[in-house]
Image 1: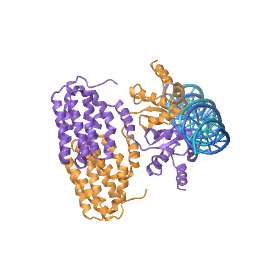
Image 2: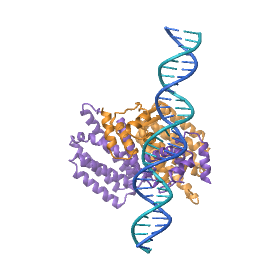
Image 3: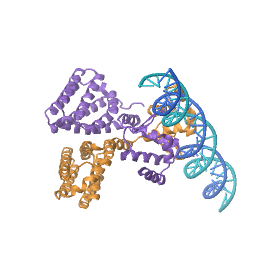
Image 4: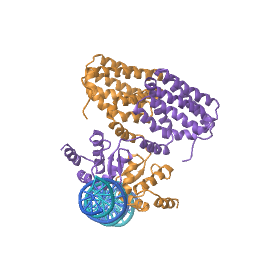
Length: 250
Length: 250
DNA sequence: TATCTTACCTTGGTCAGACCAGAATACATA
DNA sequence: TATGTATTCTGGTCTGACCAAGGTAAGATA
């Protein structure tokens, strides 16, 4: 009954097809009358009830899909999902990719995320996190001479730190920027390897971060992490000076 | 020519219609061959070129629309947009509606952003930033007795701080979370006002943040900001304890 | 009777072609 | 040259259809 009323109001309400259907579903989702795990009625029926064609309904469902609100399972049905923050990944990828010359700016966000995450990690990390960090650290040492795998090991360590912070939001944000940072990193990493002191810096810094986390010292952990970034920035600057022109063609 | 090659690869690539089209457009967008302001070719032509039907293409375009990447203008065409933050508010709305625990987690991200931003602000803030901060501070004092405008003034001050950091990325991220945090803030703010000491805390803390920025002391600025959040968290906790049941009906 | 097969129905995935209304544009006219 | 009109183009939507595979229940088998 309740539903019928809403649908009646839906037909009257402004909006062109897609808009009204999307708004309708959005309301139902937000109001909680559709809860995670629920299965929507078949597309054909739903389309009929909403007074739109199936393609239009599917546009709306697809829109909700990219928002992570529902999941369309082939030959099964449309299931309401508990949205996880991973959909932000898509968005940030787009958002950041288009302002491509702002890598340095994105770096500020990465620093923000990691400094907070390492604090949380120092408080919340479990024994398994310690193990994972230890492994990542080992891998950094092992791959110290290789640019490719070395870069990956570096990122992996930092990612492990963030995950040890147990904040899904921070993890997602961090992952979101990893893509572009990774890309920019790839283009400069050869340069970095020319410095021999780099190796020491890479290994020692990460070990100190690890120690601070294991030592349950958030304050110190952040301090070390911040220094780590500062030194990295310094290396990068020095490398840039050696480089003739930092402009890449798009 | 280049395009043809990609399209050929597209046809071969796995994925079911929608998936491949979405992935294709995504690549073009990310790669930068499609830039903000560009108008896509007509749906009919694009669908034909991609080897899918128009409804499927529209599903993909709709998906990109909710991500804020493109804008479908009726009877005009599909225009590539530079994604703005409003999309994120949509998302956080959904995420929040179904699990209120996210708030606490998002708060960690806000702390991360602001602590980094306040550091940058201490380094980069201009005289006009100082003025804006001063104004925001004044407004906090003026609205100290009103829950509604007081909350806004509070947020405005923090937003001003982030903007003074001159990092576009941090501003974007911060704005993204403002929506959801604002909403949660609204529901608890009455509770906070019961403490008289709150007023002192609110005014003094913000003034100390302001002073640290003006004093060009990043280290201290972050410290004060962090303490500010810690105390706020403490107030919130105490308020929660005073409350009988923190569960809200959905 | 209990279990295994199999045929059928449902459901999402996709397509083709069509119609509409309004924006954009070209063109004819004053 | 300026203006108004006709045509084309574009998104918005609908209809009806076909496919492939998951679910299910009737029927076959042990």
